[in-house]
Image 1 (cartoon, rainbow, N blue to C red):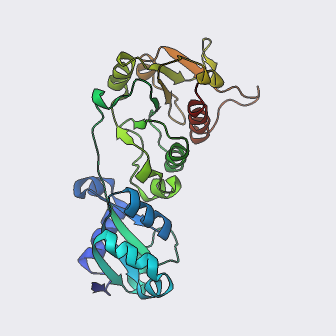
Image 2: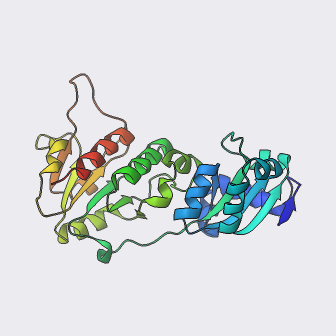
Length: 266
């Protein structure tokens, strides 16, 4: 165990780089995790921790958690209160911080389950929305959530926090949606684009749609919706019925409703 007392320490500076930069996270294959709950989720579902940082006060008040996270981490550091203040991105008071492994896996035709349910996110830019989607997916368990490359960074602190640990439990992949939807269709999966259209069917029709087959639903960008080139790869349109005076739902809420409907299929 090493003591980090200076805010100018290289390890401390590197943590702050990872906190601020998606490019740096991708380059190093690491991302920041904070608070007891999320660190325990990372240790249990994320393949352990690269690094664990804790204050003396945290070790005294949460000895069992601190010991467990020390065992789950490749390296552990006791940190001073000034260092904790520098690392703290969530105004947390528990004095526990870590680095988790960022593991990006490719999604291929071999990963597709013909009876599976898939949520596809087209350009979700708001971290709160994406975190909500991932958190809901961890409750309703689709086969995978597929993200277009222009979705916001799911390894940012805001998304990790909003997901409440879902980033460690949900199968998440970054894919080209126009290239992946034909693979899903070729596997027999019925593909839906969630959008306002004359031929759109109500969301609850997912419960009985395509018996014996899986379904995939695309949720679009907060302002622009599903892109035309993505919609063109879907043979069906889907809408969530709303009161006449309401034009649209928050993307995170809409995706949550659709995940709920998919869970209740057949």
